[in-house]
Amino acid sequence: MTPTPFEKLSNQVVLSQIGEATVELVKKSEECKLMLEDWRNCQDPEEKEMLRDVAREALKERRECNRQLQLIGKLLEDYFNISA
Image (cartoon, rainbow, N blue to C red; front, side, top):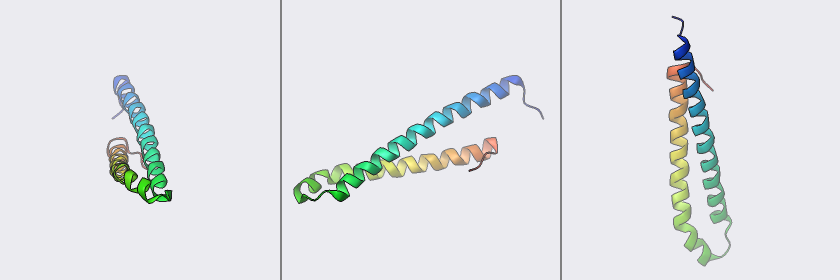
């Protein structure tokens, strides 16, 4: 069945929003990665201890970003027959 012009437009809007969300998730994941690298490379034991909670939160956020990116991939595959 051929999609109607409205369905085509709706799909384009959804795919555009998915693209924007993907870019934001990747950016956030990279920021978290940098925070974790800062913590790992810290030589001062006192500073490293102070950064521990920040690193722990960054790791949680990075894992959540990855989980959301996996969900986006599944959505694209299931509804739009797009796979990476």
